[in-house]
Length: 426
Image (cartoon, rainbow, N blue to C red; front, side, top):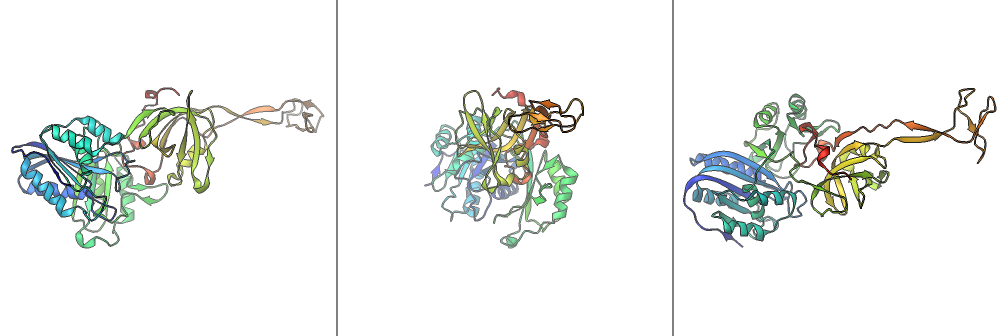
C-alpha cells in the first residue's frame, strides 16, 4: 500500500529520512542518499549534513547493516519530498519482496525517543505512522510501508556521540564485476591514520574489512572520528575510479545499540552490557565456538564467542570461575553473543604440587596412595601437598572482537574504553 501524509508548502529547514530501498541482490540506501543529496544541491537547495543511521542490528527484516539515511536540508519541503519519492521509485529494488521503502520529510523535530527505541529495541509500522500523523510531516510508505520505521528513526535521531564514514560508489558499468581496490594501499591507509580511522583492515588476521563482497554499488568505505580523517585515509587508497563519493555523519562505532542489563532480565534481540562473575570454566564446542556462564546473585546467562571472532576466543578461554567481568553483546537464542568483554578483577589460581623437602630442597614424590609424600634423597615425609599460586595470563581491562567480526554500531576500544564502574555489581 502507499501511505501519504498531508501537504505542506514552505521553504525552510527540514530533515529527509529514507529507509529500506536495498535488497540482498543489490542497491544501497546510502547510495540513494548520496545521489539525492547531489540532486537537491543541483536544484538550489542547501544540504547541510547527511547522516547514516544504523538501527538495531538484530532486526530480522534488515537486509545487511540495517541503515537508514537522513538529510538535513534547507529548501522547499514539497519539492524535496517529490524529489525523494522520485529517486526511491527510480533506484529502489522493488523486485525484492522484503524491500518496502519509506520516505519522510519533516520541518519539525520528531521525538528522539523513537530513534532510541529503534536503535536498541523494536518498533512497529503502526508506531511510525501514528507519530507521523501527529506531526506535519510529509511521508510515503511503499508496499507494506516498513521502511517508514527507519525513515522516522533517522529523522528523529539525536547523536550524542557520532563518527564519520566516507563511502565511494562504483560506476554503473563496473557493477557485477570484481572490485578493484589495491590491498596494500588499504593497509597503508590504516597504518597512517589509525586510531583516527579504524576497521579499514584487520591486521592480525590479514583481512580487508572495508571492501564489501555484496552486489551493491559500494566500492569501499572508511570509518573514522571526522570527515577530515576519513578523507585523509581515502586519498591514500588506490582503486578503480568511483562514480561518486560521500561523507556521512553516523552513529557507527558508538555502542548506541547497547543498554544495561542483568543475567536474569534480558530480552531477545536486544544488546546489553551485563556485569557478573564467571561461574563455569570456558568450554570450546564444535565449530570452535567458546562459551561460559555468567552469573549474578540470582541467575545466570550463557555467553558465546563464535568462531569468526578468531583470537578473541583465546581471551575468553583464559577466564576462570570467580572472575568479575562486564560482557557486551546481543542476546539471541538464550545466549549473549559477545562483542567485547571488560575484566574487572581476576581470582587467584593455585595448583597442588608435591611438597619441597626442607632438608634437601627438592620436590618429594608420592609415597603411594593415601601415604603422602617421601623424599628420595633423605627419606623425609610430608602428608599434604604444597598449594602453588599460578600466574594468570589474563589481566584486568577491556578486550574486543577483531575488526573483521565487529558490528557497525560496536564502539572500538581505540575510541576509548567503557566505564566499568557505571554497571551495577553482579
